[in-house]
Amino acid sequence: MKVEVEGLGDVKITDKAIDAIVLNMVYETSYLSNDPRTKIGAMLCDLDLLKRPLGGQIIGGIYGWNHLFEAYRDEEKKEKLKDRAYKHKKITHAEDHAISQANKFYNEGLGISPSKMGLWVLDVPCNGCSDKIIKAKIPRVVTHLPYALLHVDEEYNSLKKKKQNIQKMQNEGIQVLFYPLDVGQKAYMDNQEIDFKALFSH
Ligand SMILES: [Zn+2]
Image (cartoon, rainbow, N blue to C red; front, side):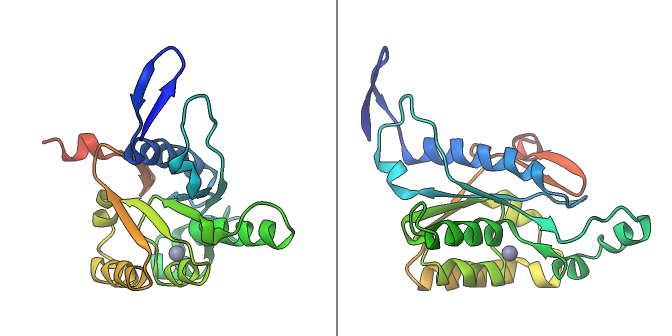
């Protein structure tokens, strides 16, 4: 896409550039999570965003983040949360959070249908979220691959399962895009901020 940006002349703005901006915004959003270990952000955004000139425009959307239903101040409970299978049952996922808010707004006559929005999220959606994405008819999902590859040790969240979820969404005609190290390169997991560029550069 070629656009006129005042003062800069013709500037080519690619989908990738917009995806990078949104993924980084989603990364900042992940800090709203009350999960002590892994923070995931998601954003639903009007897909027309990718067709419009970007100059001077603020990218807005509906944000979601993973969050526990209850506060886990108690040390014993915090310890239990290290078991991902246990935690999985106590948490609302970022995609789910964003989709339910988008549906709520849309049902109240505010905003647009999630079926006209893209989803940007910091990890490959789990089985349940993939079903919600399909149900909401979201046509485009953007995530980044290194994060997905780092989460391969748990049964419910194995690489095999992630691939099945991707396949399931693709079978429904959803475009699933992965960006490597140079886009949306940060994530927060296992109590630390991870910079993929540094992690994979040697
Ligand atoms: Zn999920």
